[in-house]
Amino acid sequence: MPDLQFQVDEAAPILFAATPQLAFKLRITADTPDTVIPAIVLRCQIRIEPTRRSYEDAEAEGLLDLFGERSRWGQTLRGLLWTHISLAVPAFTGSTLVDLPVPCSFDFNVAATKYFAALEEGDIPLRLLFSGTVFHEADDGALQVALISWEKEADYRFPVRIWREMRDAYYPNTAWICLRRDLFERVERFRTLRGLPTWEHALECLLAKTGEEVLSP
Image (cartoon, rainbow, N blue to C red):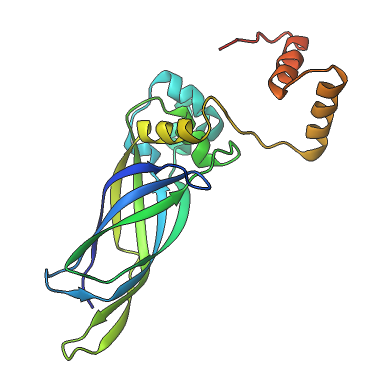
């Protein structure tokens, strides 16, 4: 079977999609320039490698919920699974460049979202692990099928600014939280009974009742 190599050249937001997505420009290269690949059914696991970058104090504070105090990071700072993706790669000879669409969640119950939101600048160290099925031609021209080993991988330093650009494009000045239904109903009843126009007003009112300082943007 052909020996395929994988590399991410760059990433960019996919604007105006139904849901937030990134496009990773994935370069796939066969072992020789004249190798014909009729198709690939590709599976990709994307992992975050937090130990491969440094963190400012403000970022460490934002990561408290994920990894605890900085003094404990030697035991708690571990890799995070971001997502799994499947992709059908069309025919090519030698090499090809395809868009790997990566769906993104802004739910703060998701570990990856918490991690991305805590970072202010720099890069996010990613590792992409590949598997799947590759169709290729034998010496006699017959179609062959082979499996791609999980040993195939690629590292990519994903710029934090790209994540922020996508977030601001889809949800400008907005964050998402998920509440239990009974708690949602209680807060909604509080908002309605007091004639508060928005959820922001309701939360500010509740924070004020607890003595918490409410900072206006």
